[in-house]
Amino acid sequence: MVLKNRLKSAQMAALLMLVIIDRTPWRLLATLYVNEKSRSGNRYFLKIKAGTWGACMDSGTFSDLRSVHSRYRTFAREKLRVDLMEREVAATASRQAWSSAGEQGLFELLIPLQRKREDLLNVVTAMEALGEGGEDLGFCLSIVAHAIGCAFVINEAGSGEQKEIFLPGLRSGAAIGACAMTELGSGSDAFSMAATARRDGDDYILDGTKLYVTNGPVADVFVIYARTGLEPGGLGVSAFAIPRSALGLDVEDGSEKLGARTANWGTLRLRGCRLPISCRLGAEGAGGSLFREAMKWERLALTAATVGAMRASLDRCLAFVKGHHRFRDQLSKYQSVLHRIVDMRARFEAGRALLHSVVQGQTGHVLSEEMVSIARLVVAESAFQNGYDEVHLRGAAGIYVNSEANLLLRNALALQSASGTQEIQKALIGSAMGLR
Ligand SMILES: Cc1cc2nc3c(=O)[nH]c(=O)nc-3n(C[C@H](O)[C@H](O)[C@H](O)COP(=O)(O)OP(=O)(O)OC[C@H]3O[C@@H](n4cnc5c(N)ncnc54)[C@H](O)[C@@H]3O)c2cc1C
Image (cartoon, rainbow, N blue to C red; front, side):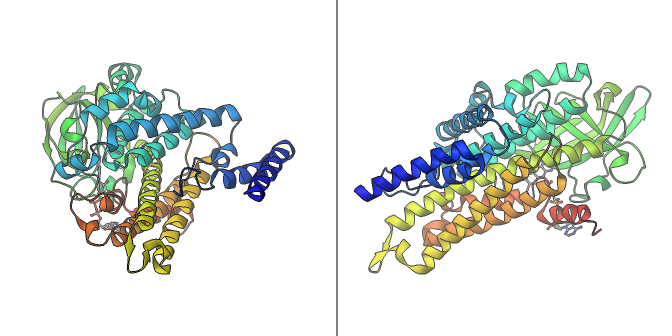
């Protein structure tokens, strides 16, 4: 005991020395130090690591991020986690949680009016905290479709008037946003869409059908992509901001999903939907580049939420293998179980480190598509594997429909397709590497 205390004092002294001498090893040591087992019992406990964000910012920003993390993790525990399993089984979104998120300033944080580098850090920190505290990846998908798929694009390319009409409601959470791109005949090859926006005098007339529109059944505002020209790929595509009340726009509820069940989704139909030119976002043909930019932010935000959910799953698995006994011992003492847990931990740490290094590697607020796709690819695969491991560890209890043990597995599957499949991430990375 005495020795242990002395070691602790020595560790603290070394820590202080290094703070003074060199900030880099301090971060490393601080990370190790805060990673120690919590003194409250033997429960493994991962604290937010001092070194993680510190490398790229001053201490003021770092403490701001800690407070963002703590605020939204608490919010998620109190408003999302409490009734999550009931909502998972019923496949319903929580309107109450949505309103509270607005009151907590979440949408303002996710929809900054003038994007700066700090906004990137805020978005990733808040999403990771939501994933960890709430494990409600359906809610995370919903807010990402709202804040990035919809509001981000309006903020990026909208006229002063469009911003004035739509952004206050989207930023407060009073209005819900959605993004409609995917079609039956295009999917991954998004820009080969069939939806058209045909010019007729000072109007456009939109026709087409969009699938899997997250928030669709409840959304007030849609960012919709349609073909306005014959130019190849995204160059012939334009984006439009459309209120739900537009004549010729209808949304039907989509089928129940296996994962991300707490997010609504639906099919959007445009039948001769006449809109004034002022509904177009940016220049004609700018839709492709707007969509690509928004997708980078979406992928990164969803990757952060997934990392948070991996952490919650890992904590639950640890508690289980330490508290569950078979044959002569607790499960964690069996080597194959221990290996499985260590593999889960390694995947979580690697995924989280990669996510943070991608964010830290950005020089401004313009994200590298290649690096975002690498982070998304790795984290989505790791989450799927950890989700499978959690189900496996729980035995038969893992496959109950209402078991929290299969949350991560189901959600990881859904998130492997949202904002582009894993194969599409590889295609983007391959292009950036000059392979295609
Ligand atoms: C939970 C969830 C939420 C979603 N929310 C929205 C939303 O809000 N708005 C919206 O517009 N869309 C949304 N989507 C749709 C999503 O963007 C598409 O599912 C995705 O782009 C893939 O399209 P697809 O489903 O048609 O699959 P397909 O494109 O038909 O792909 C089928 C399979 O073929 C593979 N594949 C396709 N092309 C290639 C290739 N070139 N090389 C190798 N493999 C290939 C794919 O990886 C996949 O495995 C959502 C999807 C999910 C699962």
